[in-house]
Amino acid sequence: MSFHAALRNSTKSVFLRVEEAFDAPFGGQDNPLRHLGAMGLFLLWIVAGSGLYLYTVLDTGIDAVYNSIGYLSREQWYLGGVLRSLHRYASDGFMLVMMLHLVREWAYGRYYGFRLYSWMTGIPLIWLAYVAGIGGYWIVWDELAQLSATATTELLDWLPIFSEPSARNFISPSAISDRFFTVLVFVHLGVPLLLILGLWAHVHRISHVDYLPTRRVMLATGAALTLLALLRPALSNPPANLAIVPGDLAFDWFILFIHPLTDLSSPAIVWALLFGLTALLFALPLLPHARPQPVAVVDPANCTGCDRCLADCPYAAISMTPHPGRPGFKLAVVDPDMCAACGICAGACPSSTPFRRRETLLTGIDMPQLPVDALRRKLEQTLAQLDGRTRIVVFACARGAAAGKTLAAADTAVIDLICTGMLPPAFVEYALRGGADGVMLTACREGGCEFRLGDRWSSERLLGEREPHLRHSVPPSRLQVTFASAHDDEVLSTALAEFRIRIETLEAASDRLPPYLRRAPHHA
Image (cartoon, rainbow, N blue to C red; front, top):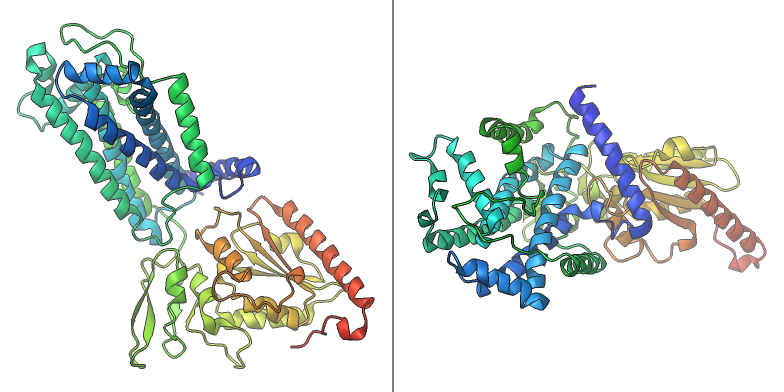
């Protein structure tokens, strides 16, 4: 194993452990680490909203801007001061969440294949975010802004892009005019607009995007930021004075860390680090990684153009075109560069029902590595081999807990799936009719699905909230859905034991009923 792979696996293990620990108090739906992208967008909207208010009330000018923002912080602390503090702390939070999101996606190996576009479009956003953040500190024009402006221009002067050193603009007070602040405000508004446009490009190849976290997470985050703004309001340092060197200042290490780094090293080293890290991020997809799996294949003869696969695809890899052999009908088309090979589309296809009386089950859309027909044959073979008082079939996510090693037994068969979202709900009824006393489905924890939506679509289909749905005639008592991660083998064992007890209790109660009220016998 290479150093890169070992480092990535170690980081992934840390993230998994921390995320699972956060699941206990928050749950998967409200776990911020499982929804970093949505958290970042929410914080960005706070930054944008508070920034628009500040822009409308600030006066631009050497003295006016400092005095007007000082008025907001002290005289109008209940509104302008709180919004200024929210603007500051939400910006810091956005930077933190953005970097966590970057490291997490790298650790989980989400930077190549069908995720390549999102990875590549996300890298420039880091530069835009820091340009906007650093420029925002200049607008206040206090001593910290003076230090940042001087340090940034000295850093830029190292690059051979200016005919004259730009740092000369900050040598004397007469070198700064009101036009400087007009340009600065324009830049501070323009760069965030580019950032928002870049974010749209970053996610537009992903369907069903969580643009915001849950309501509870938003309320809790907003309350925490407001409390922080009241307890520790963001205040200006003394006004900028180019005739003196700034003294000790209140510093923002989330955004302005580059200035101490430059002081400790040199502009050449800083630029080498920045350009080197950026180049490394762009080059990561070129490093060795797992071979891509075969993508979904459409069978025009069995595709009805119902567009359920289009609606359920997590990565917008499916589009609909006119059917070449059926006028008035549509045909699903798979983009191989965007297909995640998850099989969720096969689970959504109405032709994937195992009750179709065909020797070879051909479906409208299917996965070459695990066709629905092979899944049906494997289930039938499994049912024929089950032996015991309480026979249970477990459909398990291959990327979740190791259900096969933990649960497999003479009376318990485990069938691995690419993703639980690829299981047509009719397979549950087919297993029960074929001799199983119960069916257990093990899905990834909420927010932890490798393909984003597998656990969600599976739950909604089995609850009858999404097509294709499990028929209402199937007794819910004989179905168990357990959400588990790669470290939850004990959780699966406990859930299976409790499920078995429930089924045996049902069987005992059925034996005490009159014959005409007992559960119908299994039949193929």
